[in-house]
Length: 201
Length: 161
Image (spheres, chains in turn brown, purple):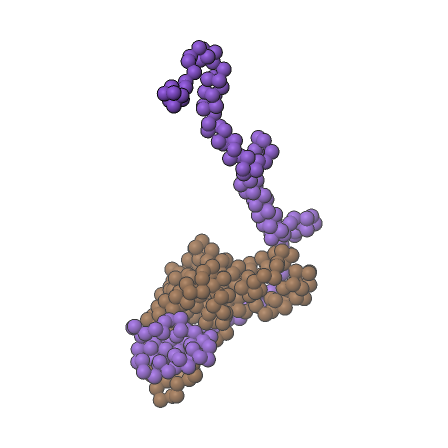
C-alpha cells in the first residue's frame, strides 16, 4: 500500500488482484446480491485509490480495506439497496442459486441440484443473521481474520466480538440443524478430524 | 457445558486453532469427561464443515474495466491538495491548541502585589491586624489629656504604710 501511496500504479494492480475476489465474496455474502457486491467492491477500491496519498501505515491494510467494505455493505443494507434480495429471501436470489434446467433423470444434474440447494440454504442462513453477526462470521470463517482485526473492523472489544461470534454460530447451528445433522450422519464411522481445521478461506 | 469453566471463547479458540498448546491440552482433557462440552464442540465442528460448502464466486470479467472507468471518472485531487495538512497533523495541532487554552484557563490570575512575603512576616502582619483595635485604644488612652486629672493609682502596700 505504501508503494500505491507513492503513486505506483503496478502496486495498485497487485492490490486489486490480491483482494478483488475476497472482497467480492465478502460483500456478496453480506448483501446477497452479486451485482451490488461488485458495485460495492469497486467502490472500496475507488476509495482506496482516492485516499492512497492520505494512507498512514497504522493498522493492517486488510483491516482498513475490510472496514471500508463492511461500512459500505452496512450502509447499502440500511439504504435498502439489497431490498430485492431480502424480499425474495425464500426464493433463490440470484443466478448461482437458480435451479439448473437440466434433463430429467440425469444423476449428475440431481446431485448438482442437491448441492445447489444446500448452498442456497447455507447462504440464506447466513443472510438471516443480524448484520453485525453476519459480518463477524464472514470475516472469521471465510476471511480467517484474527479476533483483534475483526474487532477493529466492527468497532467493538475482543470479548464482545467473541460473544457476538458465539451467538452467531449458535443461531447458524439451529438454522442449519438439518444439514449439520446430515453431516453428523455422514461422519459416523469416520475418525474425528483434528480440531483447528474448521476455517476456510 | 452448563457450569463448566470452559466458555464459548475457549471452545471457539480451540476450534479455530487459536488456543495455545496448553489451553488445547486442558480443554481436550476436559472433553474426555464432559459430554455436554464434547457435544458442543462436535456440533460446531460439523457446522463449520457445512459452512465450508459455500463456494467462492469469481468477480465478473468486466470488474477491472468498470473499476478503471470509475477511477478515471472520479474527481482528481487538486494540485494544491498537498498543502492540506494530514489528518494526524491536524488532530495534533488541534490537541495542542486545546491544551494551551485549557492551561491558560487553569493558571491563577497574577496577584496585585507581586512582592512575596516570608511566612514569618506574614504571620506578624496578621497578628498586628488582629490586634489593631487594642493598639488604637492604647494610642487614645496614652494621649487623652482628661485622664491626667485623675489621681494616680498607688499600690495597696504603699497605702498601708
